[in-house]
Amino acid sequence: MRIAIGGIATESCTFSALPTRLEDFRISRGTDDSFAEVYPFLDKYPDIDFVGTITARALPGGPVEAAVYNAIKNELLGELKSRGPFDGVYLDMHGAMNVAGMDDAEADLYRSIREIVGDDALLSASYDLHGNISDRIMATLDIITGFRTAPHIDALETRERAMSLLLHCLRGGIRPRKAFVKIPVAMPGEKTSTEWQPGKRIYGAIAAQIDGREVLDATVQVGYVWADEPRMTACAIAIGMHEEKISLAAGELAALYWKHRRDFDFGAPALSVDDCLRRAMSDAVKPVFISDSGDNPTAGGAGDVTYFLSRALALQPPDMIYASIADHAAVRTCIAAGLGAEVDLQIGGKLDTRTSKPLNISGTVETIKADADNPQVVLKTGGIHIILTSKRSPFHRRRQFTDLNLKPEAHNIVVIKIGYLEPELKAMARRAYLALSPGAANQDITALTFERIQRPCYPFDPDMEWEPIVEIV
Image (cartoon, rainbow, N blue to C red; front, side, top):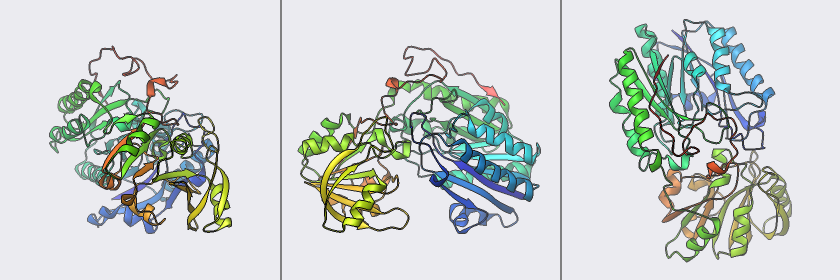
């Protein structure tokens, strides 16, 4: 049995002016060194011939340039054509890619793959729970399964489940039926974490719907809200051989999601930037973590909006880390000046020019990390330690700070461009706030200009009525 592995995974914010270019993708080809690390479970199947093609993954950003998408897609298709035939294809996806000038990019990719591998091969995909699903996607894929945790701690488990389902169906000669329910609810991921209610209850209900026979798997997708596309919505999916049971499973999960639509909320107090700073400055505990949520690079933000930092400079907290501002030119200037140098800079506001403008700042170069791929510096001005990075860089792990000689636990306030806190950050925080700051990932979704999503949709149409409509594919 021969299984191809590939995929193009990114999350595209259509409200961002920052295009996703070829250099933004980390591309793996064939079975290179990263293959065994990403898919260690393949060792469980010594009788299967796994063929690595191309997998490309990019940090969330703006729409993917059309030429870049076509280049990666054509390379993947070329590999499938030259190295086939295949019994099945496993696609390692995110599910919220937007390509400039194209809706529903994943559906375009799947249909092109289907043309190469033929109708007999099975296609299985693993998804982030913030992927957006369409009718075309459901009609082309045979198997789709998504993350069940946010923050996402089950990426490996989900990949393995997608592969296990694919092999189970191939060995049993099964082409599963699919039940699909679009749920007209749009929510930012910061309100739908599975660490608190109602997300915890909804995702906790999935396992009970699966019996491993009539219902092979079930999935609930929150969807990705910052994509102005017709497919932007939550949904519920169940796959298996018993149409009535998969219909019931998908319908029950959809109804549960709808029932709790008004209960979704942030997991930390959500306040204005100034209110977050003032509360943190008066808190007796430390460290207090604040999410600069509107410019979260893992939700599509550019990572260089200066609004929060400008307000911090105005309020002058005595001890704060700010992570981070992406500014290649500013980093180069600091490195050239050297450790301990006093520099005058214009930082940020060069990527997200819709929301921000450069901020004039003076400070001392406190730390230099001359990494070949992504040089970083710490600029100290007053009591604020500002991390500047050459590339857009989410700060999710303690080591990213300690590599810059910063210990988060030792500081009063730690500000990070993020939404809900990732596990390592949450473990360090004695208290947390979410700042309702500007940026491409603005949490006030009803204030954004959506023109192409399907209406009615909650919360844009708060008084709408709805009943689950299950499609069997």
